[in-house]
Image (cartoon, rainbow over all chains, first blue to last red; front, top):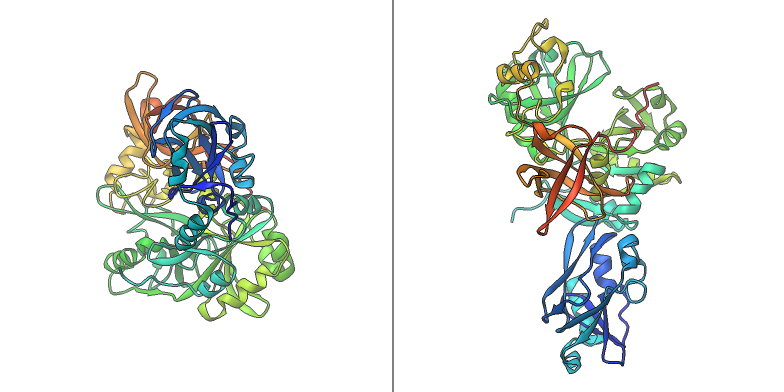
Length: 130
Length: 370
């Protein structure tokens, strides 16, 4: 069983989005996703300042098993990336919702958050995935 | 889709939480609860138990089976002592590799272990190549690999006689009343044992071994990263019908008596081309080890380039080496770029990542040589 915090929004491609309340969001991958990937050995982070379209590939997570693309949950500019993952990619496994965050974005339109999945809908998706 | 085969340990894998995936026609555990990385580390530090029952176990009987098998493999089988095991290759007329295998010499027979995916083809090849005077029996037995520096600690308790064997020896023993055939060998670069057991006893033996505190069940994921760090080839990836033993750096698998000027020179498929390559070293590419400088794994299929941007080769196996702590890979490069410490570039997602041609194995082997 994986943890799915109620205060986050989710994508079908297993990213989570936290509304920071200041017009920015934080993005990472879900507990379910990190379990499915297995031990993460490398995270390719996007460049700060890059403008992302919704659904655009913006990075890659490599586990011992395979490479998996990261998709932008919404359109926006990359404000900051979690550089600690360069030396400690396993943080994505250990703390997917906190220390293992991937990037902070400034969404072009934050109201599109409402179009993402809520925790219940994501829980159902994760369950079907198993 | 055709039905997948199951090994005698299938139910035990499921009970232990193994994540089952299709592999070479079998339903096999890719990992258990520990996960690939911890399973890898546990095997290097303590002891792991692997189910390799999907591999083909074959007995060859007839007059002088060693002499007969030499018609199909370049290894020195005739010179092998009874109770000794040797690595061998089935070659084809073009000098390519049909499969790699282990050969044990018995008193009056040979015992072979071949790759799961090649098993049917190998048996047909053996029957056609050896002719009607030889019996080729495919055994319905389980095969377990107990690997790691503490494998001998475990065997010391359960089967002390097996600990008298050195690397690449084979004999029959009993473990807790179960008759087994064991060799001191494996596919991880560590000391360890490969244990063949009647299918009906396989689960009881596996449970007995897993009851020892050092032993954890290990899946195919860690098996692959362990053998990669040990510099061992995976058939169908690092060697196949398009690679010769010389290109693959497996000259050591061509017995001295089988080489030019040897007492049983040639006489195996592709001998002319292979022995000429051994002699003249005029092959144009070579299998090499590759060590990454960053953290991004470089996987099978990644193209390799020279500093000048010329395409010089391809990666045939690769990933992150948990014990090395860096990306490790093997692949083929043009011979002029194959020197140790030479820098090459692997293309990953459009980026050229620097890699160094490195000596294999990437880890120090733990083989017990007495």
